[in-house]
Image 1 (tube, rainbow, N blue to C red):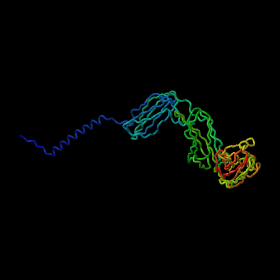
Image 2: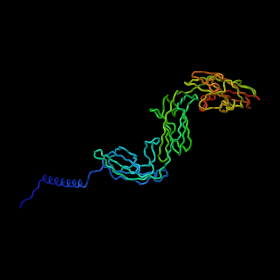
Image 3: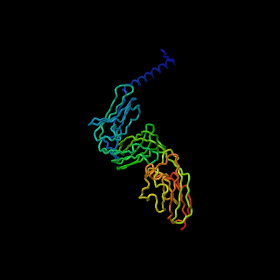
Image 4: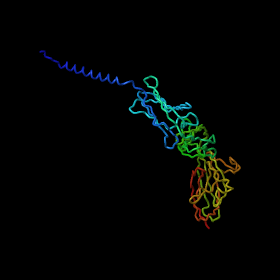
Length: 413
């Protein structure tokens, strides 16, 4: 009888050999069941019809695709009748993932046909193509599908009749070309944004304002939103209108800013006298004003020395010749009591009307110049105590100096 004997080392070698055989067989089986991994697969759309008109039904669809290799992806549409191509995505890096990629399509495409920036596709039949180029090399792989566009919104938010004037804005508060007027009309309700830029900064003017299908107008004061001055230069304005379905229209143009500056003045002296009078008598106000800014101040009449009654304010005298014109005229004003909007006003000028910068119309108070203005008011108001005060009126803007030199005038009946 022969005895069989196996050493421990031999037994270990036999086990390892058997294990390698099993693993190798499994590996060979796995490799035999796996083909090469494709860059692109499973391309499909969530729907075959889209109606981009904002009614909430079938307004969009989703395109899905699976990436098997690190690839650069391009997605585009092509009109079946015109063969015009619309690129949705270009040269996107995509890596393999366990979940498919998706692209939400709302029926709009980027446009290179001014004034459109983005627009809804016209009605028709389209093919969509997903193309993946593997970074490892080889020809791009593509898959296509079909979609139909119906009942698309046909009226875009065109910015019609756009006018911006004047072409040169001088924002120095002299009431001459201080502001730019934007006017246009919209055929449909749209959300409007207006920006102004010089290549270095963008100044927001109107931001996401919903406007109806009417004539529209806006006034820009030539300044930043915080009121700071912009430098002299040429600026580009962009008027953009977007509707609810994704059409976006832009209109552009240029305007210039010249001679920017800030008007500023201060009252240095006030006297109101007498402080006790009989009803029907007259008080005199004396005011000294200095231009402390860096631009001329534009002023209108009546001239210094003009006589009022408490029953006849500036807006009614001389056939309303001196009513507020807006745009930044400055005047000295007199008021009393709770305030009546400074009903008595005088020009910031000592010169007679025919010697004004614009004879009989307007004069200028230049930087550093100081003037003394007087005026008289006959008291016809039946009040025994009248608290008068003085202010500077920047018409259409506000009261840079308000309720100064308050003085009690006692009136006897």
